[in-house]
Length: 383
Image (cartoon, rainbow, N blue to C red; front, side, top):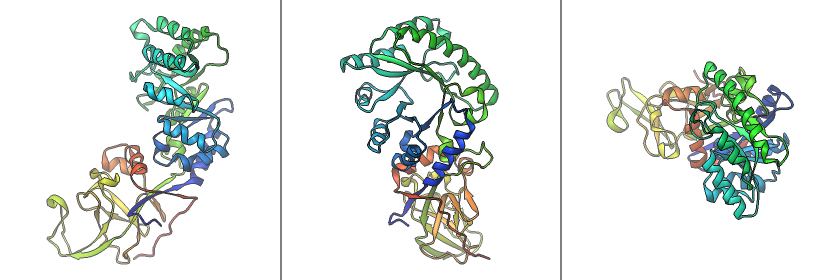
């Protein structure tokens, strides 16, 4: 229990379990990069790193320098791959942590090279190519300049190409299949061209994140970048992965109101019967998005209760008329398991219209986190 009105419980045993399950899906020669960007998807780098260290993973993926520095401070000595193009100051600061930079094209490669030479250093880089049509960054074969750009990058003395990478814009199987084939051809050309730099060592090819890697084995190449599966946010393996996060609060107040009363801002909800409503002291300021108001359900005593009002900044209301045993201080689960019930990512996505990660990565910044190892709260006995 936390003194805060809402908190996250992170199941560290689930993280370790998920890592082991994903590794079993890969060929032993395929390197697994555990993605801990966005502070480990809101789960906390400090809470996730111990499992990564125990599994002796050789690569992690970050976006912010703070994540890389935290990993080093926690004793991680393996490779750190940035998963986006970085700004000049980030690149400069990242040298101390040994960050391998994601290079977003020729102009960005030139920037990385300039920073490296100014520091009399060499930066390991992964060159993005736009094989999948994401068109976010990377060299594109369609503009007729790919060969010249690859040749120019190979000549930069401050960059050491160690990877060629891409990223998928869609999980559609047909789209993925086309992208994998295109990446296979173009990345082979890029690896050959970058090999002209003559610095030795392999140049890895990688394009697959969780969904693609678990649904299309041809996407594995030399390395896969696993994020959602690490945190149990996918059902691709038929329940083999365990969700690692619960968003939890408690009942702050309980009151009865007559039929005909309206509830919450803008009088969005009308009571059709005498009702018992409970206050949950969490709101949109805590990252529990207003789009959930009047649509989501929560768990109390292992049973569901609807969110009935349009969320306030720091509170929302649930209808517990059908749950007469609920008392002040009882646990409320907004996301995750309680007893035999679960508020899942798919449910949150359905009622909010957003991907679940859009919410839970924010929760990690806004509410306290507590490590738990496999804790599941039992259901209360109800009618």
